[in-house]
Image (cartoon, rainbow over all chains, first blue to last red; front, side, top):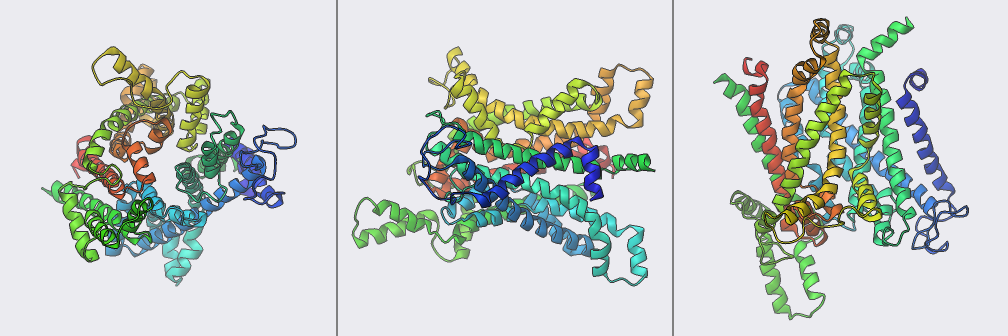
Length: 286
Length: 332
Protein backbone atom coordinates (compact mmCIF):
# COMPACT_ATOMS: atom_id res chain seq x y z
CA UNK A 1 0.00 0.00 0.00
CA UNK A 2 2.83 2.35 0.90
CA UNK A 3 4.42 1.57 -2.44
CA UNK A 4 1.28 2.49 -4.32
CA UNK A 5 0.87 5.69 -2.32
CA UNK A 6 4.48 6.64 -3.03
CA UNK A 7 4.05 5.86 -6.69
CA UNK A 8 0.91 7.95 -6.92
CA UNK A 9 2.65 10.80 -5.23
CA UNK A 10 5.99 10.81 -7.02
CA UNK A 11 5.46 9.34 -10.45
CA UNK A 12 3.29 11.33 -12.84
CA UNK A 13 3.27 8.54 -15.41
CA UNK A 14 2.02 6.08 -12.81
CA UNK A 15 -0.69 8.52 -11.77
CA UNK A 16 -2.00 9.02 -15.31
CA UNK A 17 -1.68 5.32 -16.11
CA UNK A 18 -3.55 4.29 -12.97
CA UNK A 19 -6.32 6.77 -13.76
CA UNK A 20 -6.72 5.35 -17.27
CA UNK A 21 -6.77 1.80 -15.96
CA UNK A 22 -9.47 2.72 -13.45
CA UNK A 23 -11.62 3.99 -16.33
CA UNK A 24 -10.97 0.76 -18.25
CA UNK A 25 -11.85 -1.32 -15.20
CA UNK A 26 -15.02 0.72 -14.78
CA UNK A 27 -15.99 -0.35 -18.31
CA UNK A 28 -15.38 -3.97 -17.36
CA UNK A 29 -17.56 -3.63 -14.28
CA UNK A 30 -20.29 -1.92 -16.32
CA UNK A 31 -20.41 -4.91 -18.65
CA UNK A 32 -22.10 -6.87 -15.86
CA UNK A 33 -24.91 -4.33 -15.80
CA UNK A 34 -25.42 -4.21 -19.55
CA UNK A 35 -29.10 -4.11 -20.53
CA UNK A 36 -28.35 -6.31 -23.56
CA UNK A 37 -26.73 -9.72 -23.84
CA UNK A 38 -23.44 -9.56 -25.78
CA UNK A 39 -24.83 -11.35 -28.84
CA UNK A 40 -28.28 -9.78 -28.97
CA UNK A 41 -28.80 -8.23 -32.36
CA UNK A 42 -31.45 -5.83 -33.60
CA UNK A 43 -32.23 -4.60 -30.11
CA UNK A 44 -31.73 -0.94 -30.96
CA UNK A 45 -32.29 1.07 -34.19
CA UNK A 46 -29.48 0.39 -36.67
CA UNK A 47 -26.70 2.81 -37.66
CA UNK A 48 -27.51 5.58 -35.22
CA UNK A 49 -24.76 8.15 -34.63
CA UNK A 50 -23.73 8.83 -31.02
CA UNK A 51 -26.51 10.55 -29.09
CA UNK A 52 -27.72 10.88 -25.55
CA UNK A 53 -29.70 7.69 -25.79
CA UNK A 54 -26.96 5.68 -27.53
CA UNK A 55 -23.74 7.07 -26.08
CA UNK A 56 -21.41 5.76 -28.76
CA UNK A 57 -23.96 5.10 -31.48
CA UNK A 58 -25.24 1.77 -32.79
CA UNK A 59 -23.95 -0.77 -35.32
CA UNK A 60 -25.33 -2.10 -38.58
CA UNK A 61 -26.59 -5.17 -36.76
CA UNK A 62 -28.50 -3.11 -34.24
CA UNK A 63 -26.18 -3.33 -31.27
CA UNK A 64 -25.38 -0.52 -28.90
CA UNK A 65 -21.70 0.30 -29.37
CA UNK A 66 -21.16 1.43 -25.78
CA UNK A 67 -22.46 -1.75 -24.18
CA UNK A 68 -20.73 -3.84 -26.82
CA UNK A 69 -17.51 -2.08 -25.92
CA UNK A 70 -17.87 -2.98 -22.25
CA UNK A 71 -18.07 -6.67 -23.18
CA UNK A 72 -15.23 -6.26 -25.67
CA UNK A 73 -12.87 -4.70 -23.16
CA UNK A 74 -13.77 -7.38 -20.62
CA UNK A 75 -13.11 -10.24 -23.03
CA UNK A 76 -9.89 -8.74 -24.36
CA UNK A 77 -8.64 -8.37 -20.81
CA UNK A 78 -9.65 -11.97 -20.05
CA UNK A 79 -7.68 -13.21 -23.07
CA UNK A 80 -4.70 -11.13 -22.05
CA UNK A 81 -4.93 -12.30 -18.43
CA UNK A 82 -4.96 -15.96 -19.43
CA UNK A 83 -2.00 -15.38 -21.73
CA UNK A 84 -0.09 -13.51 -19.05
CA UNK A 85 -0.87 -16.09 -16.37
CA UNK A 86 0.29 -19.01 -18.47
CA UNK A 87 3.28 -17.31 -20.04
CA UNK A 88 4.60 -15.97 -16.74
CA UNK A 89 4.00 -19.25 -14.88
CA UNK A 90 6.06 -21.17 -17.41
CA UNK A 91 8.64 -18.41 -17.51
CA UNK A 92 9.07 -18.12 -13.74
CA UNK A 93 9.13 -21.89 -13.22
CA UNK A 94 11.62 -22.64 -15.99
CA UNK A 95 13.78 -19.65 -15.15
CA UNK A 96 13.93 -20.54 -11.47
CA UNK A 97 14.52 -24.26 -11.99
CA UNK A 98 17.29 -23.75 -14.52
CA UNK A 99 18.81 -20.97 -12.44
CA UNK A 100 18.95 -23.18 -9.34
CA UNK A 101 19.88 -26.51 -10.85
CA UNK A 102 22.57 -25.20 -13.19
CA UNK A 103 24.78 -27.68 -15.01
CA UNK A 104 23.62 -29.67 -18.01
CA UNK A 105 19.94 -29.08 -17.30
CA UNK A 106 20.49 -25.34 -17.28
CA UNK A 107 22.48 -25.43 -20.51
CA UNK A 108 19.82 -27.49 -22.27
CA UNK A 109 16.96 -25.28 -21.09
CA UNK A 110 18.89 -22.13 -21.92
CA UNK A 111 19.57 -23.15 -25.48
CA UNK A 112 15.92 -24.14 -25.96
CA UNK A 113 14.89 -20.78 -24.55
CA UNK A 114 17.33 -18.95 -26.82
CA UNK A 115 15.87 -20.83 -29.75
CA UNK A 116 12.31 -19.89 -28.83
CA UNK A 117 13.24 -16.24 -28.47
CA UNK A 118 14.47 -16.19 -32.04
CA UNK A 119 11.54 -18.02 -33.64
CA UNK A 120 9.19 -15.40 -35.10
CA UNK A 121 5.89 -15.54 -33.27
CA UNK A 122 3.49 -13.77 -35.59
CA UNK A 123 3.74 -16.26 -38.50
CA UNK A 124 3.58 -19.10 -36.00
CA UNK A 125 0.43 -17.77 -34.32
CA UNK A 126 -1.12 -17.12 -37.70
CA UNK A 127 -0.30 -20.62 -38.89
CA UNK A 128 -1.87 -22.17 -35.80
CA UNK A 129 -4.87 -19.86 -35.84
CA UNK A 130 -5.43 -20.47 -39.56
CA UNK A 131 -5.43 -24.21 -39.03
CA UNK A 132 -7.75 -24.05 -36.04
CA UNK A 133 -9.95 -21.48 -37.72
CA UNK A 134 -13.42 -21.39 -36.24
CA UNK A 135 -12.45 -23.81 -33.49
CA UNK A 136 -10.31 -21.42 -31.51
CA UNK A 137 -12.42 -20.00 -28.70
CA UNK A 138 -11.30 -16.80 -27.02
CA UNK A 139 -10.11 -18.85 -24.04
CA UNK A 140 -8.07 -20.97 -26.45
CA UNK A 141 -6.62 -17.82 -27.97
CA UNK A 142 -5.45 -16.75 -24.53
CA UNK A 143 -3.86 -20.16 -23.99
CA UNK A 144 -2.11 -19.99 -27.34
CA UNK A 145 -0.72 -16.52 -26.73
CA UNK A 146 0.45 -17.60 -23.28
CA UNK A 147 2.27 -20.61 -24.67
CA UNK A 148 4.20 -18.32 -27.01
CA UNK A 149 5.25 -15.68 -24.54
CA UNK A 150 7.42 -17.30 -21.90
CA UNK A 151 10.91 -17.50 -23.38
CA UNK A 152 12.06 -13.96 -22.80
CA UNK A 153 10.71 -13.62 -19.23
CA UNK A 154 12.22 -16.97 -18.30
CA UNK A 155 15.63 -15.76 -19.42
CA UNK A 156 15.30 -12.67 -17.25
CA UNK A 157 14.18 -14.65 -14.19
CA UNK A 158 17.06 -17.04 -14.63
CA UNK A 159 19.59 -14.22 -14.51
CA UNK A 160 17.83 -12.76 -11.46
CA UNK A 161 18.00 -16.09 -9.65
CA UNK A 162 21.64 -16.52 -10.58
CA UNK A 163 22.47 -13.27 -8.84
CA UNK A 164 20.19 -13.93 -5.85
CA UNK A 165 21.75 -17.34 -5.31
CA UNK A 166 25.13 -15.75 -4.68
CA UNK A 167 23.89 -13.23 -2.13
CA UNK A 168 24.94 -13.50 1.48
CA UNK A 169 21.51 -14.09 2.96
CA UNK A 170 21.19 -17.23 0.85
CA UNK A 171 24.28 -18.67 2.48
CA UNK A 172 23.01 -17.58 5.88
CA UNK A 173 19.80 -19.45 5.15
CA UNK A 174 21.66 -22.56 4.09
CA UNK A 175 23.83 -22.55 7.22
CA UNK A 176 20.76 -22.00 9.36
CA UNK A 177 19.43 -25.23 7.93
CA UNK A 178 16.65 -23.93 5.69
CA UNK A 179 15.67 -26.27 2.86
CA UNK A 180 16.06 -25.12 -0.74
CA UNK A 181 12.30 -24.94 -1.19
CA UNK A 182 11.92 -22.73 1.85
CA UNK A 183 14.74 -20.43 0.77
CA UNK A 184 13.22 -20.11 -2.68
CA UNK A 185 9.69 -19.34 -1.53
CA UNK A 186 10.49 -17.28 1.57
CA UNK A 187 13.66 -15.44 0.61
CA UNK A 188 13.97 -15.27 -3.15
CA UNK A 189 10.41 -14.98 -4.41
CA UNK A 190 9.84 -11.60 -2.76
CA UNK A 191 12.76 -10.25 -4.78
CA UNK A 192 11.22 -11.48 -7.99
CA UNK A 193 7.78 -9.99 -7.41
CA UNK A 194 8.66 -6.43 -8.56
CA UNK A 195 10.15 -7.79 -11.77
CA UNK A 196 7.12 -9.97 -12.19
CA UNK A 197 4.85 -6.93 -11.99
CA UNK A 198 6.70 -5.01 -14.69
CA UNK A 199 6.82 -8.16 -16.75
CA UNK A 200 3.09 -8.80 -16.38
CA UNK A 201 2.43 -5.42 -17.95
CA UNK A 202 4.60 -6.16 -20.96
CA UNK A 203 2.77 -9.47 -21.25
CA UNK A 204 -0.54 -7.58 -21.36
CA UNK A 205 0.77 -5.30 -24.12
CA UNK A 206 1.90 -8.31 -26.16
CA UNK A 207 -1.37 -10.19 -25.72
CA UNK A 208 -3.64 -7.23 -26.48
CA UNK A 209 -1.62 -6.37 -29.58
CA UNK A 210 -1.78 -9.93 -30.85
CA UNK A 211 -5.47 -10.28 -30.05
CA UNK A 212 -6.32 -7.19 -32.09
CA UNK A 213 -4.04 -8.28 -34.93
CA UNK A 214 -5.46 -11.78 -35.17
CA UNK A 215 -9.04 -10.60 -34.92
CA UNK A 216 -8.76 -7.99 -37.67
CA UNK A 217 -7.29 -10.67 -39.91
CA UNK A 218 -10.42 -12.68 -39.16
CA UNK A 219 -8.52 -15.36 -37.26
CA UNK A 220 -9.87 -14.82 -33.77
CA UNK A 221 -13.09 -16.09 -32.29
CA UNK A 222 -15.37 -13.83 -34.29
CA UNK A 223 -18.48 -14.67 -32.29
CA UNK A 224 -17.09 -13.23 -29.08
CA UNK A 225 -16.96 -9.50 -28.57
CA UNK A 226 -13.40 -8.36 -28.21
CA UNK A 227 -11.72 -5.11 -29.14
CA UNK A 228 -10.26 -6.81 -32.19
CA UNK A 229 -13.48 -8.41 -33.39
CA UNK A 230 -15.34 -5.10 -33.00
CA UNK A 231 -12.87 -3.56 -35.44
CA UNK A 232 -13.21 -6.60 -37.70
CA UNK A 233 -17.01 -6.37 -37.88
CA UNK A 234 -16.83 -2.61 -38.26
CA UNK A 235 -14.66 -3.10 -41.33
CA UNK A 236 -16.87 -5.97 -42.48
CA UNK A 237 -19.92 -3.73 -42.54
CA UNK A 238 -17.95 -0.98 -44.31
CA UNK A 239 -18.11 1.46 -41.45
CA UNK A 240 -15.48 3.66 -43.05
CA UNK A 241 -16.98 3.91 -46.53
CA UNK A 242 -20.45 4.58 -45.16
CA UNK A 243 -19.19 7.21 -42.73
CA UNK A 244 -20.19 5.35 -39.58
CA UNK A 245 -16.80 5.79 -38.00
CA UNK A 246 -18.12 5.70 -34.44
CA UNK A 247 -18.29 1.92 -34.76
CA UNK A 248 -14.52 1.89 -35.36
CA UNK A 249 -13.41 4.79 -33.20
CA UNK A 250 -14.83 3.27 -30.00
CA UNK A 251 -12.75 0.04 -30.04
CA UNK A 252 -9.68 1.86 -31.40
CA UNK A 253 -9.83 4.43 -28.62
CA UNK A 254 -10.46 1.71 -26.03
CA UNK A 255 -7.46 -0.34 -27.10
CA UNK A 256 -5.17 2.70 -27.27
CA UNK A 257 -6.28 3.81 -23.81
CA UNK A 258 -5.81 0.36 -22.32
CA UNK A 259 -2.31 -0.20 -23.65
CA UNK A 260 -1.15 3.34 -22.91
CA UNK A 261 -2.54 2.99 -19.37
CA UNK A 262 -0.71 -0.28 -18.81
CA UNK A 263 2.48 1.09 -20.31
CA UNK A 264 2.49 4.25 -18.19
CA UNK A 265 1.94 2.17 -15.06
CA UNK A 266 4.87 -0.04 -16.00
CA UNK A 267 7.04 3.02 -16.69
CA UNK A 268 6.27 4.33 -13.23
CA UNK A 269 6.98 0.94 -11.70
CA UNK A 270 10.18 0.57 -13.67
CA UNK A 271 11.47 3.95 -12.52
CA UNK A 272 10.51 3.06 -8.98
CA UNK A 273 12.36 -0.24 -9.16
CA UNK A 274 15.48 1.15 -10.78
CA UNK A 275 18.16 0.81 -8.09
CA UNK A 276 19.68 4.20 -8.87
CA UNK A 277 16.49 6.21 -8.42
CA UNK A 278 15.63 4.01 -5.47
CA UNK A 279 18.85 5.05 -3.72
CA UNK A 280 18.02 8.68 -4.41
CA UNK A 281 14.61 8.23 -2.83
CA UNK A 282 16.05 6.49 0.22
CA UNK A 283 18.47 9.35 0.70
CA UNK A 284 15.61 11.81 0.57
CA UNK A 285 13.69 9.85 3.16
CA UNK A 286 16.67 9.29 5.39
CA UNK B 1 41.44 -21.38 -32.42
CA UNK B 2 39.99 -20.98 -28.94
CA UNK B 3 37.85 -18.20 -30.36
CA UNK B 4 36.45 -20.65 -32.86
CA UNK B 5 35.91 -23.40 -30.34
CA UNK B 6 34.50 -21.34 -27.54
CA UNK B 7 32.67 -18.68 -29.44
CA UNK B 8 31.88 -19.50 -33.05
CA UNK B 9 31.10 -23.19 -32.72
CA UNK B 10 28.36 -22.81 -30.07
CA UNK B 11 26.74 -20.13 -32.25
CA UNK B 12 26.75 -22.39 -35.27
CA UNK B 13 25.20 -25.17 -33.19
CA UNK B 14 22.58 -22.72 -31.97
CA UNK B 15 21.79 -21.69 -35.53
CA UNK B 16 21.32 -25.29 -36.62
CA UNK B 17 19.18 -25.93 -33.54
CA UNK B 18 16.93 -22.94 -34.23
CA UNK B 19 16.36 -23.98 -37.82
CA UNK B 20 15.83 -27.60 -36.79
CA UNK B 21 13.22 -26.71 -34.18
CA UNK B 22 11.59 -24.19 -36.50
CA UNK B 23 11.24 -26.65 -39.34
CA UNK B 24 9.99 -29.35 -36.98
CA UNK B 25 7.38 -27.05 -35.49
CA UNK B 26 6.18 -25.92 -38.92
CA UNK B 27 5.99 -29.58 -39.89
CA UNK B 28 4.12 -30.73 -36.80
CA UNK B 29 1.55 -27.97 -36.35
CA UNK B 30 -0.51 -28.67 -39.46
CA UNK B 31 -0.41 -32.38 -38.73
CA UNK B 32 -1.53 -32.05 -35.14
CA UNK B 33 -4.58 -30.08 -36.15
CA UNK B 34 -7.94 -31.82 -36.18
CA UNK B 35 -8.59 -30.46 -39.68
CA UNK B 36 -7.28 -32.62 -42.48
CA UNK B 37 -6.16 -30.32 -45.29
CA UNK B 38 -6.84 -33.00 -47.89
CA UNK B 39 -10.43 -33.50 -46.83
CA UNK B 40 -10.85 -29.77 -46.66
CA UNK B 41 -9.54 -29.33 -50.18
CA UNK B 42 -11.73 -32.21 -51.37
CA UNK B 43 -14.69 -30.61 -49.68
CA UNK B 44 -14.02 -27.37 -51.51
CA UNK B 45 -13.69 -29.15 -54.85
CA UNK B 46 -16.74 -31.33 -54.50
CA UNK B 47 -18.90 -28.55 -53.14
CA UNK B 48 -19.85 -27.34 -56.60
CA UNK B 49 -19.80 -30.56 -58.58
CA UNK B 50 -20.46 -34.22 -57.98
CA UNK B 51 -17.67 -36.67 -58.64
CA UNK B 52 -17.80 -40.42 -59.00
CA UNK B 53 -16.37 -42.28 -55.97
CA UNK B 54 -13.43 -43.56 -58.03
CA UNK B 55 -12.54 -40.08 -59.17
CA UNK B 56 -12.77 -38.80 -55.59
CA UNK B 57 -10.45 -41.53 -54.37
CA UNK B 58 -7.99 -40.78 -57.13
CA UNK B 59 -8.15 -37.10 -56.37
CA UNK B 60 -7.60 -37.81 -52.71
CA UNK B 61 -4.54 -39.90 -53.52
CA UNK B 62 -3.01 -37.21 -55.69
CA UNK B 63 -3.70 -34.60 -53.05
CA UNK B 64 -2.04 -36.79 -50.41
CA UNK B 65 1.00 -36.99 -52.69
CA UNK B 66 0.93 -33.28 -53.24
CA UNK B 67 0.69 -32.37 -49.57
CA UNK B 68 3.40 -34.85 -48.68
CA UNK B 69 1.00 -36.79 -46.46
CA UNK B 70 2.02 -40.26 -47.69
CA UNK B 71 3.38 -42.87 -45.32
CA UNK B 72 4.05 -42.78 -41.61
CA UNK B 73 4.73 -39.58 -39.72
CA UNK B 74 8.48 -40.29 -39.76
CA UNK B 75 8.51 -40.84 -43.53
CA UNK B 76 6.61 -37.61 -44.00
CA UNK B 77 9.03 -35.84 -41.74
CA UNK B 78 12.06 -37.07 -43.68
CA UNK B 79 10.44 -36.16 -46.99
CA UNK B 80 9.63 -32.74 -45.66
CA UNK B 81 13.28 -32.23 -44.74
CA UNK B 82 14.37 -33.35 -48.18
CA UNK B 83 12.13 -30.74 -49.77
CA UNK B 84 13.29 -28.07 -47.34
CA UNK B 85 16.94 -28.81 -48.09
CA UNK B 86 16.31 -28.65 -51.83
CA UNK B 87 14.44 -25.39 -51.21
CA UNK B 88 11.56 -26.87 -53.17
CA UNK B 89 8.34 -26.05 -51.40
CA UNK B 90 6.01 -27.52 -53.97
CA UNK B 91 3.09 -25.91 -55.75
CA UNK B 92 0.73 -23.39 -54.26
CA UNK B 93 -2.77 -24.76 -53.87
CA UNK B 94 -4.81 -21.76 -54.73
CA UNK B 95 -2.90 -20.58 -57.76
CA UNK B 96 -2.11 -24.14 -58.68
CA UNK B 97 0.50 -24.37 -61.42
CA UNK B 98 2.55 -21.63 -59.77
CA UNK B 99 5.14 -22.88 -57.31
CA UNK B 100 5.48 -21.46 -53.84
CA UNK B 101 9.00 -20.40 -54.78
CA UNK B 102 7.73 -18.31 -57.67
CA UNK B 103 5.11 -16.57 -55.53
CA UNK B 104 7.65 -15.80 -52.83
CA UNK B 105 10.13 -14.64 -55.47
CA UNK B 106 7.62 -12.15 -56.87
CA UNK B 107 6.58 -10.79 -53.52
CA UNK B 108 9.88 -10.63 -51.71
CA UNK B 109 11.29 -7.55 -53.46
CA UNK B 110 8.39 -5.35 -52.44
CA UNK B 111 8.81 -6.39 -48.85
CA UNK B 112 12.58 -6.12 -48.79
CA UNK B 113 12.42 -2.69 -50.42
CA UNK B 114 9.80 -1.32 -48.04
CA UNK B 115 11.11 -2.86 -44.83
CA UNK B 116 14.80 -2.48 -45.61
CA UNK B 117 14.39 1.26 -46.08
CA UNK B 118 12.11 1.80 -43.12
CA UNK B 119 14.11 -0.32 -40.69
CA UNK B 120 17.34 1.52 -41.47
CA UNK B 121 15.66 4.96 -41.49
CA UNK B 122 13.88 4.43 -38.18
CA UNK B 123 17.05 3.05 -36.66
CA UNK B 124 19.04 6.17 -37.57
CA UNK B 125 16.23 8.49 -36.48
CA UNK B 126 15.66 6.67 -33.20
CA UNK B 127 19.33 6.47 -32.26
CA UNK B 128 19.99 10.15 -32.95
CA UNK B 129 16.78 11.49 -31.39
CA UNK B 130 17.18 9.19 -28.40
CA UNK B 131 20.78 10.28 -27.95
CA UNK B 132 19.81 13.94 -28.13
CA UNK B 133 16.97 13.45 -25.65
CA UNK B 134 19.23 11.50 -23.33
CA UNK B 135 21.94 14.13 -23.44
CA UNK B 136 19.72 17.21 -23.18
CA UNK B 137 17.37 15.67 -20.68
CA UNK B 138 15.77 18.79 -19.29
CA UNK B 139 14.98 20.74 -22.45
CA UNK B 140 11.33 21.23 -23.30
CA UNK B 141 11.68 19.64 -26.74
CA UNK B 142 13.22 16.48 -25.41
CA UNK B 143 10.42 16.13 -22.86
CA UNK B 144 7.81 16.73 -25.56
CA UNK B 145 9.44 14.22 -27.88
CA UNK B 146 9.65 11.64 -25.14
CA UNK B 147 6.06 12.01 -24.04
CA UNK B 148 4.77 11.77 -27.60
CA UNK B 149 6.80 8.70 -28.47
CA UNK B 150 5.98 6.98 -25.17
CA UNK B 151 2.31 7.23 -26.01
CA UNK B 152 2.80 5.97 -29.57
CA UNK B 153 5.02 3.05 -28.54
CA UNK B 154 2.56 0.69 -26.84
CA UNK B 155 -0.28 1.19 -29.33
CA UNK B 156 -0.88 -1.98 -31.34
CA UNK B 157 0.68 -1.52 -34.77
CA UNK B 158 -2.54 -2.30 -36.60
CA UNK B 159 -4.26 0.64 -34.95
CA UNK B 160 -1.50 3.08 -35.93
CA UNK B 161 -1.60 1.91 -39.53
CA UNK B 162 -5.36 1.92 -39.72
CA UNK B 163 -5.71 5.42 -38.27
CA UNK B 164 -3.12 6.73 -40.74
CA UNK B 165 -5.01 5.09 -43.58
CA UNK B 166 -8.30 6.57 -42.38
CA UNK B 167 -6.87 10.07 -42.16
CA UNK B 168 -4.51 10.36 -45.12
CA UNK B 169 -6.05 8.05 -47.67
CA UNK B 170 -9.74 8.36 -46.92
CA UNK B 171 -10.66 11.66 -45.29
CA UNK B 172 -7.84 13.63 -46.93
CA UNK B 173 -7.09 11.54 -50.00
CA UNK B 174 -3.47 12.63 -50.35
CA UNK B 175 -2.15 9.12 -50.72
CA UNK B 176 -3.52 6.12 -52.62
CA UNK B 177 -5.63 3.56 -50.76
CA UNK B 178 -4.10 0.33 -52.10
CA UNK B 179 -1.35 -1.01 -54.33
CA UNK B 180 2.39 -0.83 -54.80
CA UNK B 181 2.79 1.31 -57.91
CA UNK B 182 1.04 2.40 -61.07
CA UNK B 183 1.95 1.53 -64.64
CA UNK B 184 4.57 -0.86 -65.91
CA UNK B 185 7.91 -1.14 -64.14
CA UNK B 186 10.45 1.13 -65.78
CA UNK B 187 12.96 3.76 -64.86
CA UNK B 188 10.61 6.58 -65.76
CA UNK B 189 9.74 9.43 -63.43
CA UNK B 190 6.04 8.60 -63.39
CA UNK B 191 6.61 5.00 -62.33
CA UNK B 192 9.20 5.78 -59.68
CA UNK B 193 7.17 8.64 -58.23
CA UNK B 194 4.09 6.45 -58.01
CA UNK B 195 6.26 3.87 -56.27
CA UNK B 196 7.19 6.44 -53.65
CA UNK B 197 3.66 7.73 -53.35
CA UNK B 198 2.31 4.24 -52.67
CA UNK B 199 5.06 3.39 -50.23
CA UNK B 200 4.80 6.59 -48.22
CA UNK B 201 1.96 5.72 -45.82
CA UNK B 202 3.05 2.12 -45.15
CA UNK B 203 6.58 3.38 -44.56
CA UNK B 204 5.38 6.17 -42.27
CA UNK B 205 3.34 3.74 -40.17
CA UNK B 206 6.32 1.44 -39.70
CA UNK B 207 8.73 4.29 -39.01
CA UNK B 208 6.48 5.77 -36.31
CA UNK B 209 6.37 2.60 -34.24
CA UNK B 210 9.95 1.51 -34.86
CA UNK B 211 11.36 4.96 -34.14
CA UNK B 212 9.45 5.12 -30.87
CA UNK B 213 10.91 1.78 -29.83
CA UNK B 214 14.44 2.73 -30.88
CA UNK B 215 14.12 6.13 -29.23
CA UNK B 216 13.24 4.63 -25.85
CA UNK B 217 16.11 2.16 -26.06
CA UNK B 218 18.60 4.77 -27.26
CA UNK B 219 17.57 7.28 -24.63
CA UNK B 220 17.95 4.76 -21.82
CA UNK B 221 21.40 3.75 -23.08
CA UNK B 222 22.51 7.34 -23.59
CA UNK B 223 21.29 8.42 -20.15
CA UNK B 224 23.50 5.87 -18.42
CA UNK B 225 26.46 6.98 -20.55
CA UNK B 226 25.82 10.66 -19.85
CA UNK B 227 26.10 10.08 -16.11
CA UNK B 228 29.52 8.45 -16.44
CA UNK B 229 32.72 10.16 -15.47
CA UNK B 230 34.22 10.52 -18.91
CA UNK B 231 31.32 12.67 -20.08
CA UNK B 232 31.72 14.99 -17.11
CA UNK B 233 35.42 15.14 -17.81
CA UNK B 234 34.84 15.96 -21.46
CA UNK B 235 32.40 18.68 -20.46
CA UNK B 236 34.90 20.16 -18.02
CA UNK B 237 37.46 20.11 -20.80
CA UNK B 238 34.81 22.09 -22.70
CA UNK B 239 34.83 19.89 -25.74
CA UNK B 240 32.07 20.83 -28.18
CA UNK B 241 28.84 19.18 -27.06
CA UNK B 242 28.14 17.86 -30.52
CA UNK B 243 31.43 16.01 -30.39
CA UNK B 244 30.75 14.61 -26.92
CA UNK B 245 27.35 13.35 -28.01
CA UNK B 246 28.22 11.87 -31.37
CA UNK B 247 31.81 10.73 -30.89
CA UNK B 248 31.63 9.50 -27.31
CA UNK B 249 28.15 8.95 -25.96
CA UNK B 250 26.45 7.52 -29.04
CA UNK B 251 29.49 5.54 -29.99
CA UNK B 252 29.40 3.77 -26.66
CA UNK B 253 25.76 2.84 -27.13
CA UNK B 254 26.42 1.38 -30.58
CA UNK B 255 27.03 -2.22 -29.59
CA UNK B 256 23.53 -3.23 -28.49
CA UNK B 257 22.03 -0.98 -31.14
CA UNK B 258 23.93 -2.58 -34.01
CA UNK B 259 23.03 -6.03 -32.69
CA UNK B 260 19.41 -5.06 -32.63
CA UNK B 261 19.57 -3.56 -36.12
CA UNK B 262 20.85 -6.88 -37.41
CA UNK B 263 18.00 -8.72 -35.78
CA UNK B 264 15.38 -6.32 -37.15
CA UNK B 265 16.86 -6.69 -40.62
CA UNK B 266 16.59 -10.45 -40.21
CA UNK B 267 12.96 -10.11 -39.24
CA UNK B 268 12.24 -8.50 -42.62
CA UNK B 269 11.46 -11.87 -44.13
CA UNK B 270 8.69 -12.29 -41.64
CA UNK B 271 7.06 -9.75 -43.90
CA UNK B 272 5.16 -6.73 -42.82
CA UNK B 273 1.98 -8.76 -42.65
CA UNK B 274 -0.19 -6.15 -41.02
CA UNK B 275 1.27 -3.25 -43.00
CA UNK B 276 0.72 -4.95 -46.28
CA UNK B 277 -2.73 -6.12 -45.25
CA UNK B 278 -3.88 -2.67 -44.19
CA UNK B 279 -2.38 -0.76 -47.11
CA UNK B 280 -2.96 -3.44 -49.73
CA UNK B 281 0.75 -3.44 -50.51
CA UNK B 282 1.96 -6.34 -52.65
CA UNK B 283 4.59 -8.32 -50.76
CA UNK B 284 5.25 -11.33 -48.58
CA UNK B 285 2.72 -10.18 -46.01
CA UNK B 286 -0.04 -9.90 -48.58
CA UNK B 287 0.92 -13.27 -50.01
CA UNK B 288 0.76 -14.73 -46.51
CA UNK B 289 -2.62 -13.18 -45.88
CA UNK B 290 -4.06 -14.59 -49.10
CA UNK B 291 -2.55 -17.95 -48.21
CA UNK B 292 -4.19 -17.86 -44.78
CA UNK B 293 -7.61 -16.92 -46.10
CA UNK B 294 -7.52 -19.65 -48.71
CA UNK B 295 -5.84 -22.22 -46.42
CA UNK B 296 -2.86 -22.56 -48.77
CA UNK B 297 -0.68 -24.52 -46.35
CA UNK B 298 2.29 -24.90 -48.65
CA UNK B 299 2.59 -21.16 -49.09
CA UNK B 300 2.07 -20.49 -45.36
CA UNK B 301 4.77 -23.02 -44.49
CA UNK B 302 7.07 -21.59 -47.13
CA UNK B 303 6.84 -18.08 -45.74
CA UNK B 304 7.10 -19.30 -42.14
CA UNK B 305 10.25 -21.26 -43.01
CA UNK B 306 11.73 -18.28 -44.82
CA UNK B 307 11.18 -16.03 -41.82
CA UNK B 308 12.65 -18.55 -39.39
CA UNK B 309 15.67 -18.96 -41.63
CA UNK B 310 16.02 -15.19 -42.04
CA UNK B 311 15.94 -14.36 -38.37
CA UNK B 312 18.11 -17.29 -37.31
CA UNK B 313 20.74 -16.36 -39.87
CA UNK B 314 20.62 -12.71 -38.90
CA UNK B 315 21.18 -13.51 -35.25
CA UNK B 316 24.04 -15.82 -36.22
CA UNK B 317 25.67 -13.09 -38.31
CA UNK B 318 25.20 -10.58 -35.52
CA UNK B 319 26.84 -12.94 -33.06
CA UNK B 320 29.70 -13.58 -35.45
CA UNK B 321 30.37 -9.88 -36.02
CA UNK B 322 30.37 -9.23 -32.30
CA UNK B 323 34.10 -9.91 -31.87
CA UNK B 324 34.79 -7.31 -34.57
CA UNK B 325 32.81 -4.69 -32.69
CA UNK B 326 33.56 -5.56 -29.11
CA UNK B 327 37.20 -6.18 -28.24
CA UNK B 328 36.21 -7.75 -24.93
CA UNK B 329 34.80 -10.77 -26.74
CA UNK B 330 37.82 -10.99 -29.03
CA UNK B 331 40.48 -11.04 -26.35
CA UNK B 332 38.72 -13.21 -23.84
